[in-house]
Image 1 (cartoon, rainbow, N blue to C red):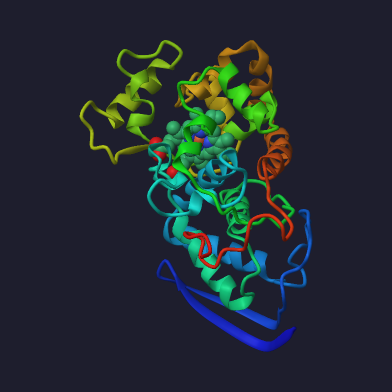
Image 2 (cartoon, rainbow, N blue to C red):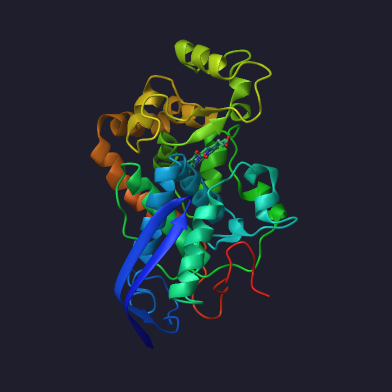
Length: 327
Ligand code: HEM
């Protein structure tokens, strides 16, 4: 174990100066463990959470769209091959190259945190854990609850585009199709209602919902549909985006559910949560009570970031760079 006293680190992340002062920095070999725990890095990399939070905070100060991007990124990681950082791997035929993942973003925040962590605690913190923590922090920075997250995930060595479609939800899915896919990951219909609340932040490209505008989907509020048509006119540039939540766009709050109640869900996969009698009551209740949403969010988020985790020395690896599996 090496003790580095009074080390001051200064970094430029997204053009912003980040200063991390560590009175005593402990560097040691990775903690041996075969399951997730809240204190997994407490001796091997005690400042991991502080460093990641600072990275996400300063990156968000430069680019306020990052919380939405990071939150979507962790969902797409966990739902395919489990939460193992497989979505981060670059290259032909990796998950990231699949059309369903092409609009994912925020990778550079994870890479930036990883570069620092490789200096502070080399070979210790997985990209899978960095992504989960970054998404957790993104929610808190956007005004949502802070969730203590058990750590110790290892990075997968497989990332294949062929695994994306069979495991990915689509906006055209019926509620039964979504429930079935969630159930295959150990998530319930209620988890679907809660985790869809992630759409209280972030943005969507016009192509993700344009089929609802021509002709106007009768389950959409007319004024909202008119507003969407204005923002996404026929032939609009493919890069144009709209806010997922038209009322409090960058705030992580329960407005998503209030939008659903007033038939302002952006995707049909959002609207069905209000039209289906099995989930309508819960949507109405969440719309009236933000604490209920935040408490349930913490539980459902923890279940999501627990999907198919790899732990222990026998599974996966700790990547040196998040975008490539180790040689
Ligand atoms: C269950 C069915 C779901 C469907 C069909 C769905 C679909 C989509 C689509 C089509 C977009 C727009 C992407 C774009 O155009 O760039 C989007 C955005 C987003 N989704 Fe979902 N999603 C679902 C669940 C979730 C879950 C469970 C989470 C996280 C827990 C999540 C988090 C997000 C976030 C934060 C954004 C905004 C991304 C950004 O700002 O770049 N979604 N989703």
